[in-house]
Amino acid sequence: MKNEIEINEQENSIYIGHKSSYDEVKVFPEKKIFIIETQYDDDHVRYYKTYEYKIETEPTKMQIRLIEDCSTPPDDYSVRDGVVLESEMKGEFTGASPEDFKKATEWNYVEILHVSYFYILSKHPEILPEIEFRKLLRQTSENIHAALTKVEDAVNDNNLGLEIITDEDGYKSIFYPETETLIKEWDEYRDLMIAGDEKKEKTTYAKKERDSKKFTDRLFSVESANYVGIDKDTFERSSEIIQHINDFLERSSSLFANEESQQSSESSNEKSSSATEKTATGARIFFGLLAGLFAFGILFQIFVAIVALVGALALGSIGVNVSESDEALRNLEATANILSVIISFVLARKLYKLITS
Image (cartoon, rainbow, N blue to C red; front, side, top):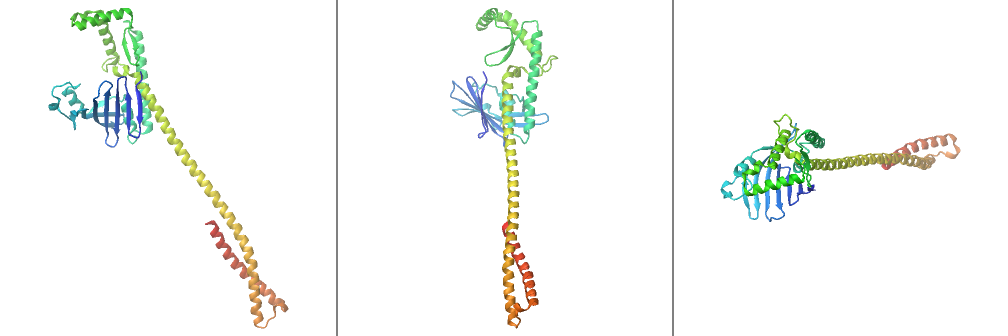
């Protein structure tokens, strides 16, 4: 059964629901810290682990160290400020020994194969840009697929009768197919184990377990010449890991497409706005010229009449009869035309600037 995954971008958190428990991972990218809250269905206690992390590139790696481990209610700390509180453990069951806690408080590399690590990486585009993040996911998926092919080939070539078993939750293992004979062998082994009888190690089921372990160790041990490229845990969770990778690739594509669409829309709006502005400017120039020419024509006629009238009055005052002197009339009209052109041009130009500004 696939784990239920919910991402809350506003809270920078990812919820991972399991069959009988849940984990909620809250990330604080600025501080490079994440907190895991865990609760089991049949338990009212909540468990919190706070980790500090570092991200390396070329190749991409992640280191984490435990800085706080507690459960509540009541507040019960095993680690605070990166220090193991052995004095407060009081010998009760904590799920891990002081030595385990001490190792966890040191910087340790982790395999970037869990959905929470994928999410943490996605919160740091300044370290791992979009394209590099997608490349990491895609390469991880390809590596797992290649390893699974090698495992399948090895299992098909074995002469022990081993098979790849996938349970109802999607987890894989390498063991013998479930037959009536295997069930009876298991019942015998289980009864001896419950009774504490050492004869259980001599049973057929115990031998099959040893053969299976020997076979799988050859495939998943880095030191082995038959190493397939992934560890046993990655093989067992391969279906889940690949599904999570595909989810993040799809989610990343959606976000990337939205960003491109937004950028394209903004660019189109800018172009449209620019084109509209150019059109409006052209229209203003055209109507400005039209208005200027019209104003020039009207003003020219008005000023011709005004200048002619003023000229006639001026000449009349000095004893010249304009209507009886052709030369005086021509001079007056010429003077009126020149002055009217100058005045009309100046006023029409001002009108044009007013309209086009």
